[in-house]
Image 1 (cartoon, helix red, strand yellow):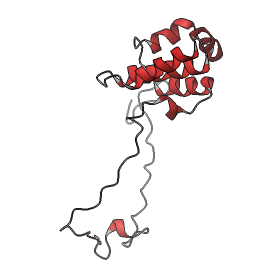
Image 2 (tube, helix red, strand yellow):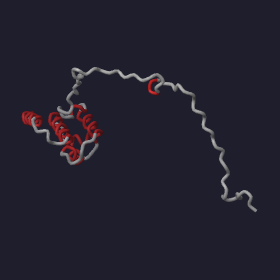
Image 3 (cartoon, rainbow, N blue to C red):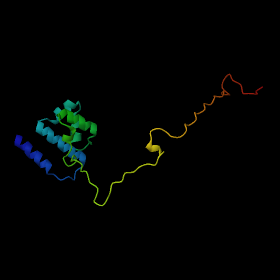
Image 4 (tube, rainbow, N blue to C red):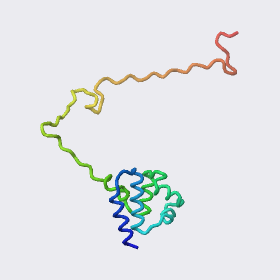
Length: 147
């Protein structure tokens, strides 16, 4: 039985990448489940959801959001990155500037607002608060100059 699992996992790694990211993540989750001997019902029970909830996500019917991915990773006792396909989690490459280009350090002129942490000009005057005027026409109040 163990050899069938290894064969399945190897076949997954060789599949074409024409599928969506959700489908590929679901495939990674299924591989981890097989390697750990966890069934869909057991995973559903540990997450506190129905087995249909698991099935919808692992078949691609329902997309897997990041919260679901984190919960599944915790339930399977793996990191979230272990559930991301290898080609997606590849380390980003840092590119060097091409030959012939020089790095430019930009400086701001003196007094530029982004160059200092405190304003250099005079302070803005305080706003005046308006006194509230009486509301006329409400019950018990008369209009001015009314007879």
